[in-house]
Each structure stands twice: as structure tokens, then as C-alpha cells.
Image 1 (cartoon, rainbow, N blue to C red):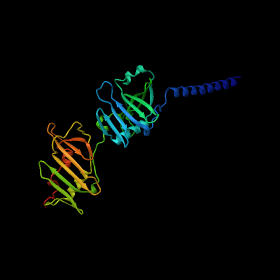
Image 2 (tube, one colour):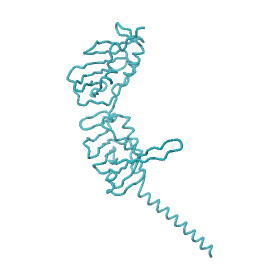
Image 3 (spheres, rainbow, N blue to C red):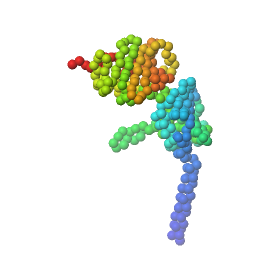
Image 4 (tube, rainbow, N blue to C red):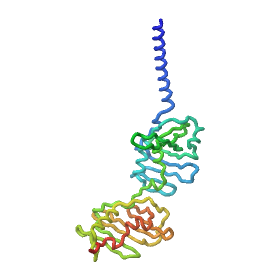
Length: 320
């Protein structure tokens, strides 16, 4: 008799465990799903980043153009920084919630998710993909325990919500950081991109110093009447082949003749003209490249201006 009662008790416990596990699995699936956002980065047509409502910043619009991506803020439209855009979209596609932290709207304030506190991300997909809106709020940090071979580190979680749904979730804060950049950081920073091996002539013109031409004859670089240092020429060409800047001067309008002009010519390449204007009010220089004719950038006397607009002495061979 006792043996039967024991077997019955064991059977009852097993039945309770079975139904309990089914209940908690069912309950968990309805309250939390880490893949709560389904996005395909190849179908994203437009992303609008709205700063917190309490700030006075204009929203940033990142949109797909016929060729690539463009970024716009207020009345300024620019080619986008493709590396940054693609990285951000890639992280967005992989977004997964770490956990559900609240179920009601009254918790939004404490997590920085009200309209006035949150950074809003509006994502539009082409076709019938519709629009998804993500709100990013506060970020909280906690220190992890030190491992056997290393120090303790800080890990962060950013709180977010989706569309008008009341739930608040936590996610890895790096995804939110991918969209937390000022406008100029989203813009294409490329100012000059050249194949230095194609260059055959550099023409330096100035209103305040001697003009000269550096020309390649066969494999030798020469300046009429001067012997050049091949190492110095090679160093300059390495500088010239790639120059980037995010110091945009969007309000500048050239009203006077350029202070300096650099003309680059070569085999099977478009002529490049770089001009530098004096900004007497800011004690700076404003540069423009024919590769990006609508873009003006700032430089002080020790920056890109100094790197590009060298004088004749720069290339001369040192006397032995």
C-alpha cells in the first residue's frame, strides 16, 4: 500500500512539473521575444533621427539615392559617409532585446523614453515594408566581475521601446550609439582621392609667393631651374593621394580670388583643382576641391592647408 502511494505521489509530481514547464514556456513567449524587430537593411529606404524633444537640434534624414546614400539636416544636403551608414544599418538589422524591463507606459519617464527625453529613430522600408519607430532612452552601466586574467569592465544597457507599444526593453548600448552622432559625422569626409602613380604634373599658384611647376619627366620629378629630392616628392604624393575632413564650412561663399591654387594633372585621370581662400574673420583658410565642388572645408595654418600648399623649397634637395 505504501509503495502504491509513493508511486502515485511521484507520478503527481511529474505531472505538475510537466504542466508547470508548459505554462512558463507559454507565458515567457507571450511576454518577451528577443527578436521583437524584424528589419532587412537592404530594404531600408530612409532613416530619420529625431533628437530628444527638449533639444533644439534639427532631425537628421539619411536616405537612399539613385547612386548611394545622402544625408540632410535643415537646408543642407550632402553625400553620406557610406562606412558609417552601412555599419549603423547592419547593427539595426541585428537588434535583439536583452530583456523586458517594464510593461506599461507610466514607466517611460523613469527610463528616459518619453517624447521629450528619447532619441527617436524612424525607419521606412521600400515597397510594403511600412515604417518602424524606435525610441532610445537612458543607458545604465554595471561593473562585471574581474576575470582570472583581466580587470573588471563596464557593460551598458540602453532602454528602448517600439512604435506606440507600452513595453520597455533593454539592449546592448552599442546599437543606440551607432545613431548618436552629429550631422557632420554622417557626411562624406572625402576631400581628395587620387591614384598617385598616375600624376605627372603639379602646378602651384599663389597670390603671395612664387609660382612653380613640379613635372615628371620619365621617372624623374623636376622643377625648372631646381633639383628636387625624390624622397620629398614621394612623401608629398602620399599626402596628396588621400585627404579627408569633416570640418565643413557650409555658409562660406567665395567673394575674392583664391589665395592659393593647386592643379594636379596626370595620365588617364581627371584634372584636380584645389583652391584655398583666406578667412580673415576666423583667421583660417577655406578649401575647395573640384572633386566635390559644392563642399567647402575649414583648415588652420597647421592643418590641411599646410600639408597641400607647400612652397618651392619644400621639394629642393638638401645641399651636401
